[in-house]
Length: 147
Image (cartoon, rainbow, N blue to C red; front, side, top):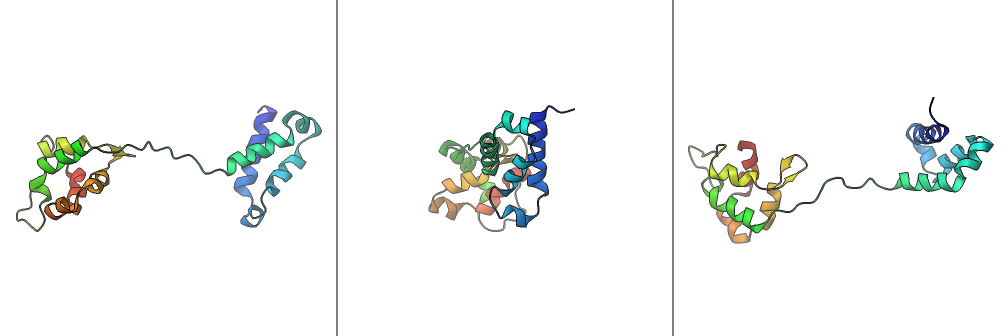
């Protein structure tokens, strides 16, 4: 059996998840329902103010759990230097593709990840207009798929 405090929180979660959208349009209505359903002893123990504060906390957007890491100009320069034959604009035949262990893939793999993917967009955002003229941005963005 759950401790009474956990029952209140579980009840709160169930009401917030199950309640129809029309009920959610009235802010605080669900919380008042929870408070009314509490026994007198639970009301004394948990105080309505604390329950309302918990409700306000639940209404906040979730924190961004991704750590923001930016790439460096050194990483950009390494990718540009080591991957230039793979990022040249135009259609080369046969199309050169980088291979794991080559300097290009080594440079690409040093770029920070965003979630689980290498963040080549970070490198692209650091490119100057002149560099964008000498390197195909879509080919550059596709490099992690080969490395």
